[in-house]
Image (cartoon, rainbow, N blue to C red; front, side, top):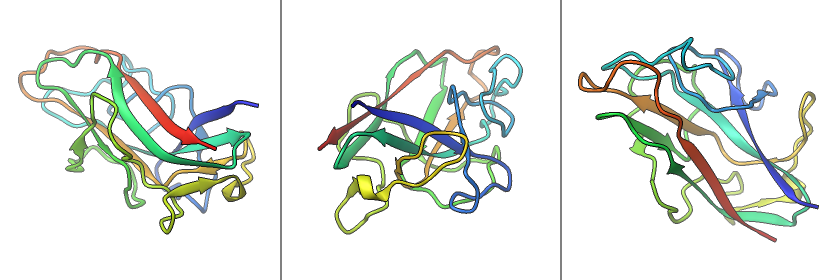
Length: 171
C-alpha cells in the first residue's frame, strides 16, 4: 500500500490538538485566513504579507516509520521581489498578515527541515497515528508555517502558481 501525504490546516481560533483541522485541496496563500483560497478572490496586496498558513503534513498508509522529511519549492516563478517564507516548526497562533520572520523556503531539496513530533528520535512512527473524523487518519509532522511576502516592486495581480514538494524516507 502506498503512503499518502495530505496537508491539514488550522484557521482562526482552531488549535492543533484541540480541533481536527481541515484537509485541503491546495495551499494557496492570500489576504484571508481560510482554507482552499482562490488567489483571484483574496490577492496578496503589493508591499504586504499574506495571512500565514499553519498546518501539518498527515502521512497515512503503509509504513513503519517516516524520517528525514524535506519541504521545498520545486517549481513556479516568483514575481519581482516576491518570496515564500517557511518554518518547519512553529508555535500555535491565530494566522494573520504580520511578518513572521521565517526563512525563505529552499528552492532545491534540502537536508531535513521539518520538525517531527518524536524529538528524541526524529522519526514519525505508524504508532503515532491519530484518528481524524472527516479525513484519513495518519501520523503527523509538527506544526509548519508558510507565508508569502511582496514588496513595492512586486507586480500587481494574482501570484504565480508554485509547487511545494515533500520528500521523505519511509520504512
